[in-house]
Length: 530
View (cartoon, rainbow, N blue to C red):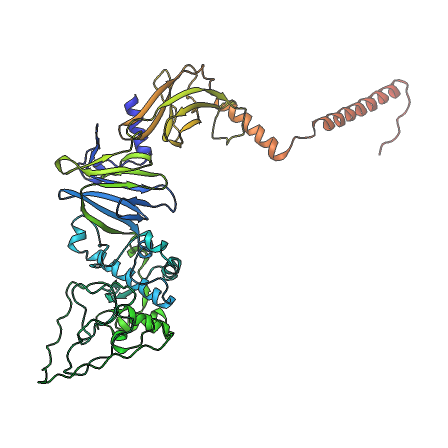
């Protein structure tokens, strides 16, 4: 019986079986040192919660860990907009139009990569990497940085907007700016993390390249193309090269404003971030900025059915061990969607296990089944209920104590083997609580058990010694409930005044009959009643 109840409970909380998924995955194997699984997924239970991967940072969305070679791969499965909020490519203090252009370009690039993931990410089942090789993603660190609220506002104001060509997101490359001395071509395979605040004027044809790099400005990162275009062939050098003219000095108080054509023009294959800054400072809007760099493309929206719900970011492709935690509570699932922990807290460690599996090690106190203790029965007074719910006059509650949060359900079995319809499992916190006792289907003694479920292989079931349950009479109960409902809705009829009026009318009628009989016996003619 306990096995049947457990199976029903698992189905009610939405566990996926191997047959439903078309796989032959087996349940997590409990061991003294944790559970062995194919992969493990952590999901925050807070509406606006996040998870922490040690040494990697704080991230919204779910954290999924997979086996990657001899190590552990870490994937952040995050909503598209939350992903864009974590992009760290330009300072959040830039003008709003430049931030909006960057947000749209980053969102477009991510959706394009989801359809064409790089090998480093696809090797562990992800869509995109978090580094400059794709685009820099730091999660909540971007929102928490200085002026981070301005970046979040830019993302929200462009929510869902992407650059489309033939109905699909374009490969919206972008860079810090054109590199002097390359003829406007792309930066080296790994461009510098810093770009000049004001690049020098272009050297005349045949001039020697500058002997030293330009002065550094605020840090900027860009997307590095996998196949940059080849540079043009070098022009012939004169016998006596002339020195390049000194770069013009920026006027006092000009700040980071950039207006030189080489930077604004970019590389010819994507957006110049410093060029976008200059255009925004000149009053251009985000749409105009993007159109100037992406062949006239304007922001649009994908149809609702084609916009993916999440982006899978490969935070790391191979670590010796990963510790996942959260400021609040979260749940832990295996590869088939079965719950390893209904409510989890603390530090959960994941490391490589035998036979290509992962070993999931919960914190102390969360590896065993929850402790549960029955404290007694409470009887409540009658309460109005819908007519279709034949409840007894006095509802009963079971009071109990839990050692840890768990899903709790009551099972009631009659002597004939029939089980009362169970209520859905209820998530109950640690400590004392109550749960309603289901209405028995038949009179007589019933076997009652209390079940607490906190995850696979962690189920506690205890019998409850209750007094003889009152028989449930659906017809009588329904009649009483209907009468009570009518009384409450319509009010009680005026019983006493109606009875008095009836008695007075009866007495008057009787008196009139007696008078007529007396007159008839005396021979007195009755008056004409016409």
